[in-house]
Amino acid sequence: MIFREAVSPDIYSIVNIHIDSFPDGIQTYMGNTYLRKKYHFLIMFSEVKLVCEINGEVVAFCFSSPKPNFKLKLGFLSYLQIILSLVKNTSIVSKLLFGRLQLSFAKNLVKSKQFLLENNVELGYIAVSQTKRSFGLGAKLISEFERIASSKFSYNKIITRTHNDRLTNFYVKNKEALIQKEKLTNDSYTCTLLWEIKK
Ligand SMILES: CC(C)(COP(=O)(O)OP(=O)(O)OC[C@H]1O[C@@H](n2cnc3c(N)ncnc32)[C@H](O)[C@@H]1OP(=O)(O)O)[C@@H](O)C(=O)NCCC(=O)NCCS
Image: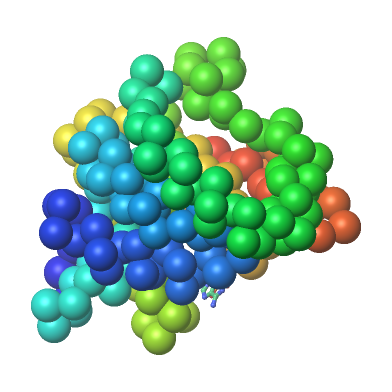
């Protein structure tokens, strides 16, 4: 097993892991073109960009969120493809968007004054292939993320958001993360956490 920096040829595997990991996520409904552009953007502008490879196959990834001054720009054709993908699933998308609106309190987290004051990096995206989950790979990936964030970019804190209460417990228990915000609606859950990187 190796951890290495993500590069453009990894995009195909990364997009497949994303679709597999977030089958009901709004970005999955936005379609392959959008996801390919998004991960290309993350490979270009994320400070910490990691994949885990087993026997030459990419099985997991994690990325830090790019700084707010880097924005994903899409051309007219991409927007058209996204709209076409979304209209195929109108009912699910409207339900997802409604859930998102209810939870939008956590949006633009990295831009908020409180977090700009801290020397933190946002763990924005993490996923492990279905067949490789629950073997400790995710935990190793997070430790590698911390190592690079601290040694290469001198960050001392990590902030993240999760929609998974099991993962929230993992951060609280193993990283001594502090819960900044937590919100539960009928069908969505979001938690914002902050923790110090232990040296
Ligand atoms: C969350 C995820 C990255 C964890 O990777 P993993 O290799 O399975 O994780 P590990 O085996 O190292 O376990 C670390 C923690 O991850 C969480 N986890 C593990 N397997 C999980 C699963 N199948 N589903 C949800 N969370 C899981 C647990 O909190 C676990 O700690 P615990 O065993 O003390 O409860 C992985 O389950 C995944 O890709 N899930 C789908 C995508 C996702 O939810 N990403 C997080 C964005 S909010």
